[in-house]
Amino acid sequence: MGYECLLAGLPDLKAGAETPIKLEDLLVMLDEMMKPGDKKLLTQLRMTVDDPAIDTLVARYDDEDVPESAKPEWWAAARALLSDADIRAMLLYEQGLHSKNRFVRAWFAFNQDMNNIMVAQICRKHGFDLKKMIVGHNEVAETLRTHTSQKDFGLGEVMDNYQEILALASIDNLMEREKRMDALRFEWLQEKTYFDVFSKEQVLAYYLQAEMLHRWALLTVEQGERVFRDMVADMKKGIDLSKA
Image 1 (spheres, helix red, strand yellow):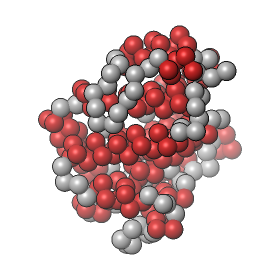
Image 2: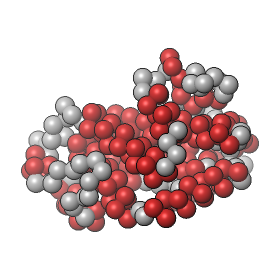
Image 3: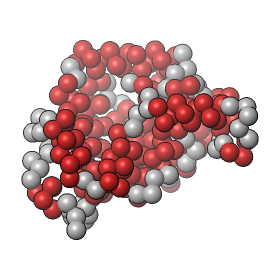
Image 4: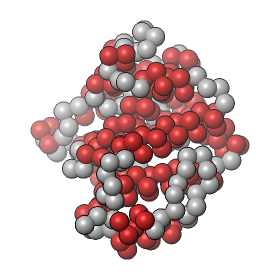
């Protein structure tokens, strides 16, 4: 049995429109109606780089008494190259990419790839060292690191929608760019759960879409411009974009 009653009773969401349901009300509803195992997936999707679980992992992997075999094989190299914020972002993605649920894995992978492509474009425009900003070690991340001089970063044979994402980076209006990125995420969520009728994946996608609409309802133009200025300033200092 799926989530027929829950999903049937929720208002429709539309990209770019106002959210028809308060996020706190939605969370209460999900907490009451979702199965325990599915609520763990929701918690995973809501995790941020400031989550205590990330603190625990950083402390454990930095501990010299912990054997290297108990740490990710990429830890030493990443620790020497990336900033603390980048390291935390990588650990966050790793948590999602190793989820037992395929939808959660795909969501984290999609966001990591899109964010890395956007970062690569910003690095190219401002002359930053791309290799110190890209997080993760999947095919897209490694391609970005090794094809810095190519116009498309070598992604033509790796991703189907790389041109669409690259085009977003060229939008000068910062608020418009961020909204287009969320619109792409919104569409991705609809496509990935289209055939998962009344499933936990549809519930998770609904929450993510509602969260996006809620964020935009709170974000003013001034706030958006300040976020971008902070992003560029942080990159100049070698700090990851994921804090923005």
